[in-house]
Image 1 (cartoon, rainbow, N blue to C red):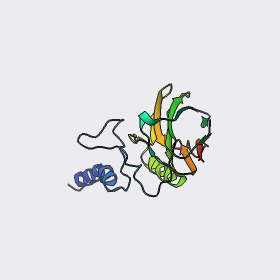
Image 2: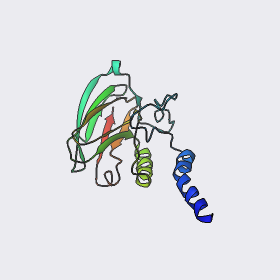
Image 3: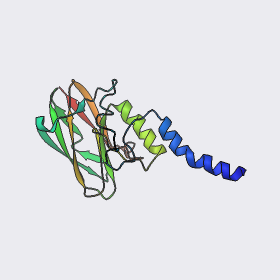
Image 4: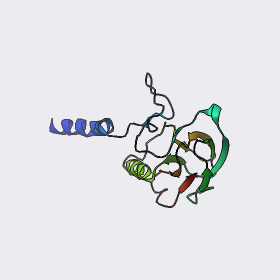
Length: 171
């Protein structure tokens, strides 16, 4: 009886941990909208973020191509934009392993990277990020509404630590 109870408790821990966590993303949904719930803008509403907000695709100012590769680098890794500009990032994974691009403040990125180390199978379905398998392409539309520096990084375990980070300079 004790063994059965232990197995049940241990089996429920991941569910309890995710339900109790303070991160309200669309993880584990493989890009799908959770049935009956609008998951758009969940990170964009975070008041502490200086990163901007999801952009309106019909108001894109310009498109910037970004390549991600297995040398743990983005090309380009520094981008200049003007405050108020809505950018379509056309992101390509030119490597042989999965990479992602996540837009946010460095504090937000570090917090999220720590969470991903604890839950490496985590999937994303949020407007400020895209995860791509080798040879995949995708996009993010983002509005940079305040001057300053906005960071982006790959939060796959070990990638950001290996230098897979970039900056958007908002003038």
